[in-house]
Length: 212
Image 1 (tube, rainbow, N blue to C red):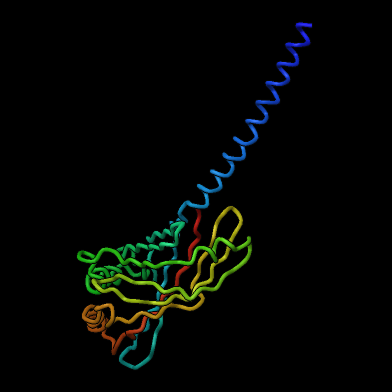
Image 2 (tube, one colour; image 1 turned 60 degrees about the vertical axis):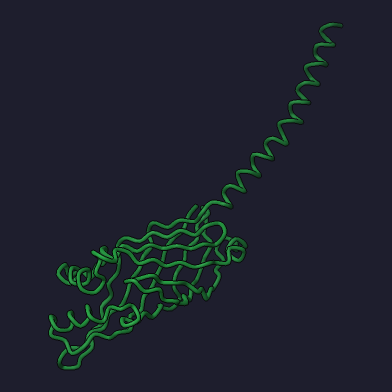
C-alpha cells in the first residue's frame, strides 16, 4: 500500500511539474521572440557606388563608377536608421585620384565620415513575408562636409530567409556638388586633369543586407 501511495504521489508531482514546465517554456519562447523582434537590424556589407561624368577639352563625356569600401548601417526596432560612410575608403581604381578626392573634395582630415539618418516605418517592414518586397519613398538626411541635406531615397526592401532583409535603391539619389560645398575641390580636379568640366550632379546607389 505504501508503494502504491508513493507511486501516486510521484505521479502527481510529475503532472504538477509538467503543468509548471509548459507555461515556463511558452514564456521563454515569447521572451525570445520579443527580444529578437526588438533587436536592431545591422549591415556591415553596405555597397555604395556613385557615377562621375567628366567632359574633356574635345567636349566628349566619360562616365565612371566609383564607390566606398567601408560603410556600416543600423536600423533600430523603433525605425531609427543610421548609416556611417568612411569617406577615406573611396575607391576609383586609381590610387592618385583616390588621394585627390580624399584631400581636395571630401577633405577627410576635417570631415572623415558622411552620415545618413532617417525614421523608417517598421510596421510595414515587419509585416513582410519571406520573398515579399516593399517599395518605399524614404525621407533621409545626409550629413556631409559640414552640410545637412534632405534627400529622398526610392528603395526596395525584401524579406529573406534567415531573418534578413535586403535594401536597394530602385533609382539613384542625385547629389549636387555645390550643395555639398565641394565645388572648390572639384575645380582643382578639373584643372589638374586638364578637363573642360566635371558634371556637378552625382547619382548615388546603395545596396545592403541587414540581419539581427
